[in-house]
Image 1 (cartoon, rainbow, N blue to C red):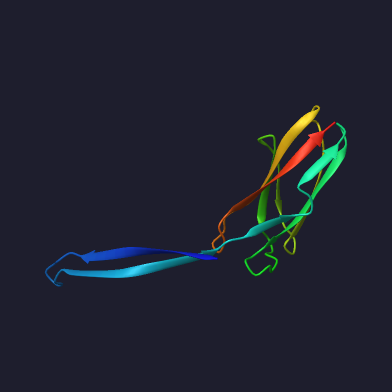
Image 2: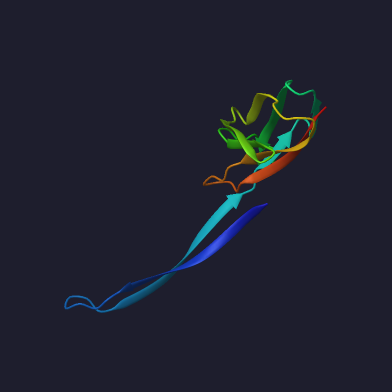
Length: 127
């Protein structure tokens, strides 16, 4: 789904001894597509101190991979990584330091000139 934004731009040229005053209006149209984060898993269950791997890809509305997407990964609200997808795919390894409990993993694809940002949640269960 495309989203479009139209903005009116008004240009005013003030009168001088060489030029008469003029006004002009035009419309600037901006279009962006949505990008989608697709995760291999939505829940990871491990023991404290174990290594996890977060894997997925970034696609457009037609399921085409989007290359060079900038991603941020947070666990329990704490930034753990900023990565760039390669060929539309990403993998990140992390050794858990969290105590027993369930934690939110948030993966965010940053907004670009062509795409809106998007975010996806996962669960990390530490036993």
